Length: 336
Length: 110
Length: 133
Image 1 (cartoon, rainbow over the protein chains, first blue to last red):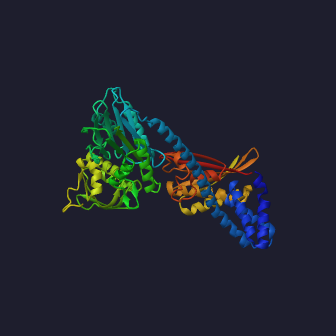
Image 2: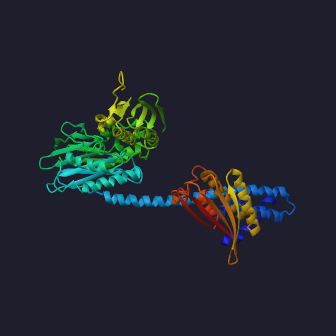
Image 3: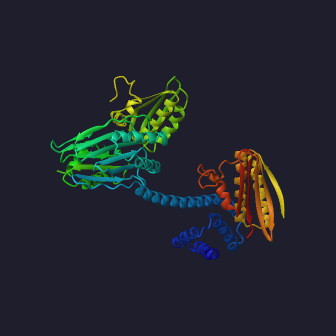
């Protein structure tokens, strides 16, 4: 401890300088000393004690009463010293947690990763951005042997780690579904049972599950309490809500989900989103679904991926780059 | 972002009036108040949300939890005073079909 | 070899008596003012825990002499409710979040050695030593 050895003479010099000239420069030297002493983990009570003993050396005639007063100062400073050391240790722990979180976020990325399928006739774009480290939104694509494209978009209530853990379970449950082709309603019924059995009662998941059959151009879908998406009719240039009634996953064990079906014509689009998109808050309140439609319209001639990227950028800007909720947007666009 | 929760347990039905915003920051407080009540046998609870200006899915989670608790303890649970925005949230999630909402509002709240 | 003297902790004034005992022994052994203050702060904290959570207990101060090395050992003992999760109370920020002083991690920092044993329902024994350098 080199600093500790010279600490006494250094402090003495500071003290003498300041007592002699009371200059700002001497005070500045004091500030620099404190930075050094903190760095070397010198506690405040040690400084008080040093101050007292130097005073006795420099001014042997200093009144006893003044010297006694330092005992009180020392006692008080011990508490501050402990609080400071505790703070340091907590800060260290926080660093550890932060790096663990980063690793966990990467693990999650890998675990939940899904490839956006590339198929003839259907242009797919998807973006998902977490509000914090970990994403409570989830989307998943599956392409089966009949070339049907399935898309799942889900949102776990809540954000952060609990949501992410829950999502990993859903992903696992989806991977464990029977191999043979299942319909959206059947898949939701299956997942509902898994969630109901395994998740805390106040945690739940919303999910929209859709399946596009390129043979027949039919889109089959069902929803478990998920934010409704849009259907864009290219011929009429009209948007309408993709309403589908269905209870959240994990509330009632024997929930049945209704399945809907529609034909997708060339140029038509299916727009799916998490509530992080519609709950997007600006100074004037929430963005309306109409605003979202305006943005889709603005970029409609771009590719599906470019549309979702641009909409995210617009909404991010509207919120001054502070996401309150996880954001996921998916567009399926049938080629003209 | 603030919330206030007034509880009136003097009558046969416990009335809980919530005001403010229910989000990830305030939901734990709501949960702390409502959960112990919902775990009592045969409890009757009515939650009034007419002064709630904002609620996100975290708040919905609290109500789903309360609903499940009350149901397993053979009690009754009602939510009243939903604004159209909140009503939409309950409709989309399908909760409007299983939780008794807005049934005792006279004249209707829009 | 050790010589022991003890203070029974029942009310808040006994905390002061325990501190006084600790300070006298520390002075006698030749601890400097800073270490004296650290030792008494640790005693305070342990005595306070007894007073607040166990209701009654003892603080004993031992003079140690281990192969020419002198030291002071605080021995805090009570038959109170005991500590359910020792790991938790030894965590920084757990007991101090209400601003209630140093907590056990603080005592550990103030002293050189620290040992704790506790069983739910039968009490807590803490031994903390400071060596003279």
